[in-house]
Image 1 (cartoon, rainbow, N blue to C red):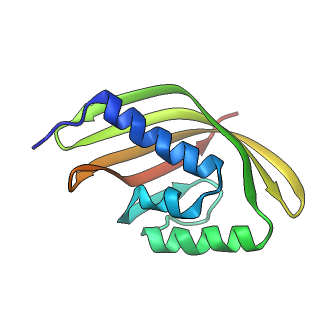
Image 2: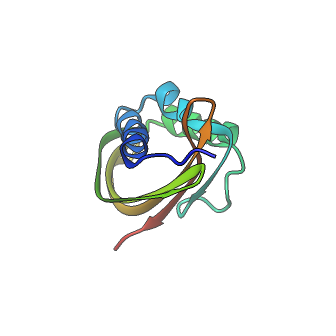
Length: 129
């Protein structure tokens, strides 16, 4: 079993953050496995696969939502055989039909090898006050 290196995990996480910051749906979701799970404090239930999150994303965009800015700080990578855990603080500003909203959250992304590269298999956001 291959153990990912820190640089590859950092690059995979940065690709997710960059795609999210650009509201680039295709590039963002390409970084997640089809069976990835998502736990967001803003949603009433866990999202059990990428398709469910994609539908939610489409609803957000249709309602006027888009990301204005997203930055990552306080990064930490923990590597394991075949996987890695990436944690960071994420500051996000979004535009909605009701105006701009900003959030500071803690995020965990779990990566695993799929084929020749890393893919996100779980994402968890918690509010940071």
